[in-house]
Image (cartoon, rainbow, N blue to C red; front, side, top):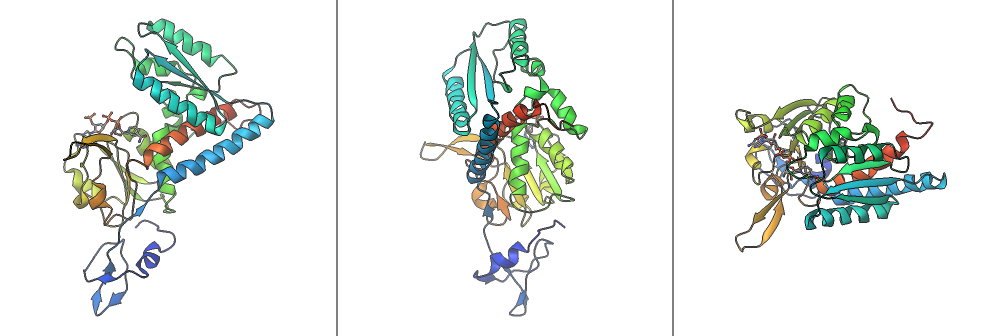
Length: 333
Ligand code: NAP
């Protein structure tokens, strides 16, 4: 059974009106009352990703200021191929996030018809530029460019998104340089609950290179027991219902309903989906049916306001890490 650290539920039950249900979950260890085994109906604790992200940014800003006092500037250079309104808006938001913590942000925009060789050369130039701490490549790229091949060009030490396959390899071998931002965000959100990951039954739904697989790797590094579910998984709910920690990264709204979640579980919703509501307005939701699942999960991340803001903060933290990795007295491995 998961190590809940302090007995959260004892505290949560205080002041709540007990209901009369018999429950046999190992997550529940409630007092007998009126001759019946009772437990408190309670909603999940919301993991406030936005607040945690702000706290992390403060910490990053503090460390960047320290580097500044030593005369070391931190710079993130982002590459945008082809100029789209969405790409430039995203880059502008990145610039603001960087500015807020003291990172210099540079956007290099290249024409949409740039060749693969020319783009690779530009990345190599940035790799060798000592003023550049970190490099990231905005996606999607135009169809003639292979995103993975271009990400492979980024020096692993400057790879602030953790997308170079070498960085995943370092994670596997226990010498993590820089891990993917979303996976790091998920781990931090889980850790914020105070629940120990060691030996916990963790189920990850979705097995993409950018989200599901790195999340599963980092959870393994934390000594959780992992099940990685994907499109070919038979009887998804049979797995998710077992999970003490459930991470969902698929991109399908409503994929995970209340019946798919174990009582008291930590539920981390990575999904970001735009859906049209009955009144015609648009709304951003995750992959988990938040309103139903929060009624019996132990902790849950909202969408928006959960993994998303934490991922942005992790990009800033990774940029700081890139800058620190090239310090002469770094402790690399
Ligand atoms: P993706 O590349 O489309 O991968 C989705 C994964 O889910 C694939 O492995 C897919 O398998 C699997 N899958 C599809 N249907 C499934 C099902 N019914 N049951 C189990 N697995 C299923 O998407 P992604 O880039 O990983 O992103 C996933 C979601 O997370 C998206 O909503 C995205 O916007 C969001 N996201 C959020 C952040 C953040 O910072 N908050 C970061 C990254 C992604 P197949 O490929 O075999 O179909």
